[in-house]
Length: 298
Ligand code: GUN
Image 1 (cartoon, rainbow, N blue to C red):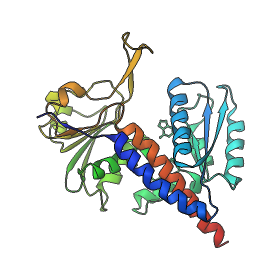
Image 2 (image 1 turned 90 degrees about the vertical axis):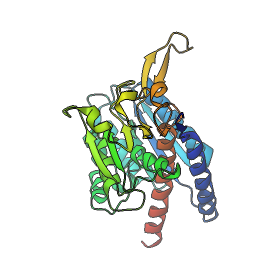
Image 3 (image 1 turned 120 degrees about the horizontal axis):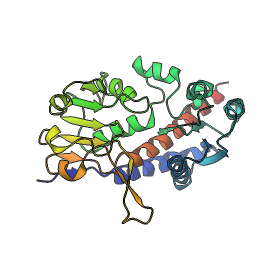
């Protein structure tokens, strides 16, 4: 039987509908959450992501500002802008779209953002709180994956989750999020990476397989066990002359063959991507609520 398709678009719409209710309540108190997005350079994928993020803000009723800079922007100018936004009362969340051009250190950018406005969950303070089991802001893609698993009826508790990739945006934060003793987690987690030997022997043990290594169609049907739940985080552009743009997006797993073996699978696009955006909105509302509380007790 072909796998159930886990519809990230539908699940993210449900989350956005819930947020609309929260935003209505905040509006009654005269509070409007605000997000500032910064994009440096003209990376086409980053432009698309930032546009999708601000469009989603508009859709649910979050105020947003976008700052677009040429790729030569000096690092000091960016850090100055971040400091200005740290102080700005109408802005509760700050996001600098990565990757940044090479003259800009992503580490310095992350450290410059006030942890209270770090809606990406990248600041070492927020990472540390997560590792201590006291999460503040969790990174949007890992959080979206966890929500997707829970809301699709695939709670990771007690399952063997195998993560492919240890990148800073997905694999590295996701592993401790899923093995902590908490609701929607409590899994046994294996992280595979470039030095892992006999990868298939590990992927074949997965109850839940999360592919986040950025290699188009890397995981094939012979690498998974029947009934596995597959979360595909990959968004790889491959040439396709039959499309208007000349390319199409494919994931890190070979969807067509794996859907015949898996129990459930996320599509690309329409799986993890919309969840990342929904979690960014959710983190922005959370940041606003926390800052409003702080200000009312000042
Ligand atoms: N680039 C790719 N994913 C992300 C993300 O989640 N946040 C930011 N800021 N940049 C990214």
